[in-house]
Amino acid sequence: MSINPMNSTPIRSETSGLKTDTLFLNMGPQHPSTHGVLRLGLTISGEVIVEAMPDIGYLHRGVEKLLETRTYAQGVVLADRLDYCSAMSNDLAFCLSVEKLLGAQVPKRAQVLRVIMAELNRIASHLIFFGTYGIDIGAFTPFLYAFREREMVLDLFEMCCGARLTYNYIRPGGVASDINADWIARCREFLDFFKPRLDEYDTLLSFNPIFLVRTQTVGIITPKTAVAWGLSGPNLRASGVNYDVRQAEPYCGYEQYDFTVALGKTGSCWDRYFCRVVEMRQSVRIVEQALSRLASGEIMAKLPKVLRLPAGEAYSHIEASRGDLGVYIVSDGGLAPYRLHFRAPCFINLAILQEILVGKKVADVIAVLGSLDIVLGEVDR
Amino acid sequence: MILDKYPAVLQAVPGGKILLTTTDDFINLGRKYSIWPLTFGLACCAIEMMAAYASRFDFDRLGVIPRPSPRQADLMIIAGTFVKKMAAPVREIYHQMPEPRFVIAMGSCANCGGPFHDAYSVVKGVDKVIPVDVYIPGCPPRPEALIYGVMELQKKIMRMKLAKGGGATLQAEKGSRDPAGGA
Image (cartoon, rainbow over all chains, first blue to last red; front, side, top):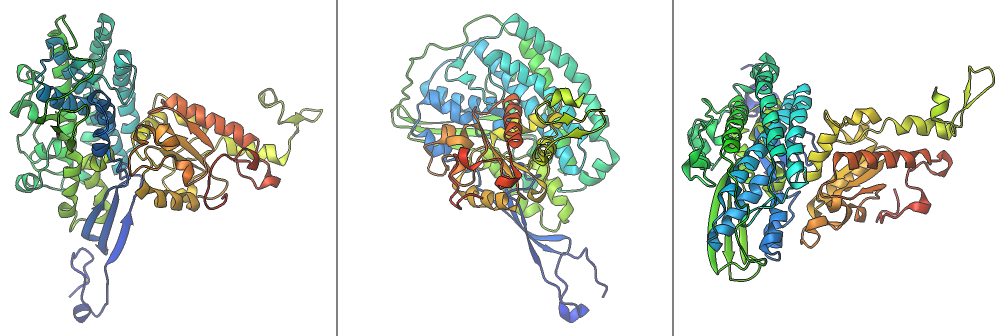
């Protein structure tokens, strides 16, 4: 029997005469490609992963506990900092849940503004993924291109709410501030600039032969596995499962917008990557439609200054950049939630690593991990 | 002319072919423009740190090039919330860096716990574990603020003396609380 380093089971001494052993490899928490402070405990046999165990908690900030001591208006600030790459989505999920329990009606203009901001944030968030995934695979240039465009989105956010990353813009009852004609013009300018850039990305990275080889047959997740592990967002849709909260359970009037849900075919790393690139294109479409239907009106519902939610519970979920983000509020009628839970898509998406990494090569770990696009702030909460 | 830029540091010998300077100034000048930070992000601030490296802000202008290994790094930017579970690894990474090593605490969380100051799992400031050279306020600080922080560190580096142990954090201005008794 020949010594095959590709063999995933350790070679026994009685068959080959060689005594081999598995090796425990510690990846992280300081590792340039773990996108934060994730630690992976890898047991490897030669080049092959025998066992992979994600170790989380290096960014556990106790947000859910903290929220029990914060009023609902203050809660938005902490919700911002969960998935810091797409803070608008977090705000939106949190506010939708508060409004659901409160029974508040959000004005129409505020709803459209929410859609615009959430979709622009999705673009910004997927651009971070596009850039960092390129770095993970070994291409540095896409990072510079992605951040050039991302800065333009951040400029738009800065114009309307003054912050670049943590916005506190979507508040219970509506949004914090209105946009003006100048903003709309700048936004349209950005969209016109951005559309041809997406084609550029395809030539730059998406169909690059080296990139294809590194990702196209790697980290395949079957639809059945994806559903079994509770994946959501682009990770689920890359496996071909058509589930998008924006269409399955529309919120903020998403049912009025015309967009297609990007679906992958095989569930490989490349499919997960490309789903996000296509999603950016769809987000541009949604923002364009939203800008054209922006009617004048109120941006904030008439709510008391100090929110006191009726006793009870509410759950609402949205399609955030990384998947199905849900917020579950239990209120006892006080100023702060009695208990608040985030259904964080990153946390649930991360768990599947244990299954799909087994049997893969060490070099593929980064490709698989990067393609899941986790944000540790949301994993650890 | 280089003399116009550093009148206090360099002197020209008459004839104009030779520049005179002290060892300290010469080393500090080189050190100042080759600060290599560790690619090490904790939370939200890390995204702004990435933005500082990227196209618009272009950290390379200051000679700041990220390195993935602590063995090759001079500077550790603590960008994000510093929680108890992370304290031991951060300290280990800090001690893996060759001296002289510098630390920038970026953002409110690294300074004092920030919006999570009352959480049970958050360390109230990274200076409780490792000494910090520059504190940058903000939640998160803008990339410009980080660049300003690095420029402040450069000023500090220019004050370093070989004879005094070489650290940017001079004993007189050491405000940090290093339990190891000053590294």
